[in-house]
Image 1 (cartoon, rainbow, N blue to C red):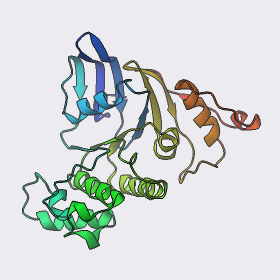
Image 2: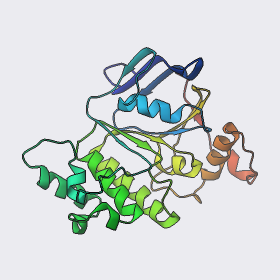
Image 3: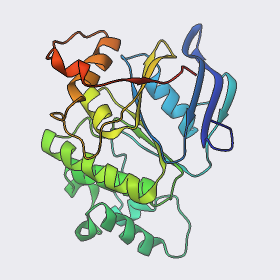
Length: 252
């Protein structure tokens, strides 16, 4: 992949705290419109990498190229409690049609009826939808998601998974999702990267057709492979792994 093709490009990136290298010589490309999920144990460097891509942390060495148009959504919605939903969506934006843009973004995430609501009156899922609308209203070329669904109940997570795929298809940003949930990574991503000690341990293309579910052929074999890479062994039916082939991506 050339530098022209990749809106995200990292070459030999290092980020360290004291003597500890949290990101250790990382090479990574993310293609336009690609949905990438990042897995790894706590302390593997996932969130540090996302924060560096978001411009919230600097790197210590290497080359990092990201589009100027980027947005991040975190596990906590981070809404201003004294501002109504639509004003949270356009926070920091100075554009003449700000309210109209906010209305459009909130409509896309199914909250046209909650424009004037204060954050304290929103459910957890609604608050995350407002945070997602705030990211999308900026029309990012890169959307960074740091475990945005982790605090939601199971049914709300399913709805949010469907919503994020619909919005990704409509707006076509490159997406990097940091998650601890292996199933979530497989359900959403084109490619899953396993990070360990600040380096890419392995990458897998997910070639399952969409829409995906945990019961479709091949899903459990991919799940078992990723869990193995994360140090967890599971039993799978003997016939199922033989029915799926993994495409490994060259490291770096």
